[in-house]
Length: 89
Image (cartoon, rainbow, N blue to C red; front, side, top):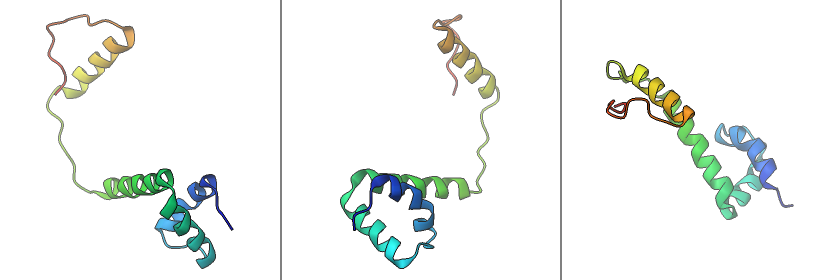
C-alpha cells in the first residue's frame, strides 16, 4: 500500500511522538525515505518543537519594538517617512 503526502502530514505529530500503530509507522517511514517534501516538513516540525521548548529568553534592545513597528508601518504604506531614521537592530 502507498501512502500519500496529505496523509503523512496528518501523521507527523504522532510519528514524532512515536505513537503510530506499527503498520502506519512503517508506511510513513517508507514514504519519508522517498519524499523530500515530507522529509523537510518532518524536519521543520522537529525544529519548531526544539525551538519552542527552549527556555532561554532573549532581551531585545531598548526601543526595538517601537522602531520595528515604525518600519513596518512605513513598509506597509510604501514609503519611508524619515530616510535618516536608523533601522531596527
